[in-house]
Image (cartoon, one colour):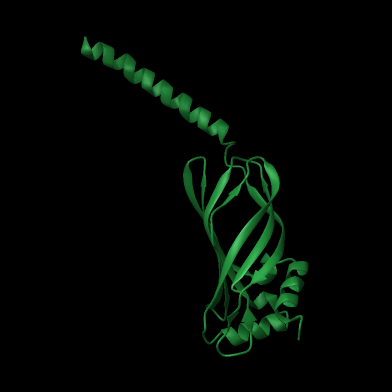
Length: 182
């Protein structure tokens, strides 16, 4: 009798798990893509200086990004963008606190970033490449760790150039921020 009762319970549990899985899939909206629109630097604070030259960068940025999220709410737990020149990483921007991307809407999301600057042999050539607006020679890679529908995901991209990542308007705004006062 125990065995007879066990089989219907197993079938019932299987059905229940399938229903829960289907509900989760529907409630999370599947794996719809997230797209990033306009990115604006709202404020720059503090100063970090590059040891070998006069280049000074802000130590923190507040950036507003237009995010189009057609799926479920996403909590970005960590994020970083690394900038390199000549194969060596020179600048890293890191998210200082988690941010939430609201579900099924286009919204402006505030991204608090910290800037770390490596003092290595490529820092001066990077500065000069930016000054000359040679964006194609500047390497960019990024990584984001997020949680969506109870699942942790890591998304990354390597081997990009700054000209692939920044629009011409963003390139000009960055140049103005770094060298506009010269």
